Amino acid sequence: MLAVGRTGLGMADGRAVYFQQAAWLILAAMIFDALDGFVARMTRTASPFGAQLDSLCDLISFGVAPGFLVLAVTRTAQRDAFLLERLVPAVCVLYALCALIRLARFTIETPADEGAHRDFSGLPSPAAAGLIAGAVLPTRELLRWGPGMASLLVGILPALAFGAAVLMVSRIRYAHVVNRLLQGRRPFVTLIEFALLLTLAYLFRELVFFLAFLGYTATGPALWAKHRLLPRTARPPSLSRPVRHQDWF
Image (tube, rainbow, N blue to C red; front, side):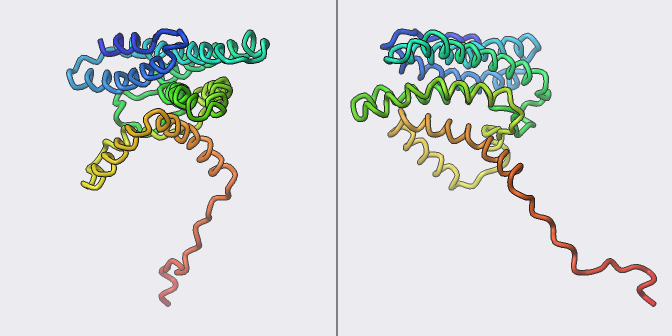
C-alpha cells in the first residue's frame, strides 16, 4: 500500500500553477520509498511480488513524473522552438528510460539483506528525481526576488535531467546515506546537529533540497575523478628488516 500510495504522489498535476506542488509530492514519494521496504521487513511481509511492485512504483515516481515535470516547466519559458519540440522531449524520454534501466539493475544486483549494502552503483533514482524536484522548488520564490535566477534554473533543467540520466546508468559509486547514518550508535551531539539541519531545512526549504541533492550528485563524479586522476599514495617501505633465522649467527 505504501508503494502504491507514493505512485499517486509522484503523478502530480502537470499544469503550470502546480509545478511547485508537483515537486513537493515527488519529494514526499521519497519518504514512502524509504518506509515501504522497512515496513515490509518489520512485518515480515516481504515478497518477490512486493519487490517488483516497488520497482514499478519507483519508475513512475522517480522516472516518469520528473520527466514530465521537466517537460512541463520548460514549456512555460520562451525558448527556441527546436529545443521545445525536439531536444527537451528527447531528454525527458531518455531520463525515464535510464531510470528504468537503473531500477532493473538495482533489482538484480541488490542482496537479499538490503540494509547490508553501504554503496550504490550509479546515482539512485530517488536522488535523481530529488535533484530535478529540488531545482523546481525555488523557482516560484526566485520570480519575486531574482527573476534572472529563476530563468537560469528553468533553463538548466534539461541539462540536469540529462546529467542525472547518465549518472543513473553509470558505474560510479554513491554512498547509501540512510544505511550509513542509521548503522551503529551515534553520540548525543549527532542529534543536536540533526535538529539544527532540520531547522535550516525548514527556514530555507525551497533552496536547501536543491543544494543537498546537487551536492550528493556531485560527490560521485568527484570521488571517481579523485581515484582516477590523483596518484595513489604508496605505502612507505618498512624500516625494520624482517628477522630470519640465519641473521642470528
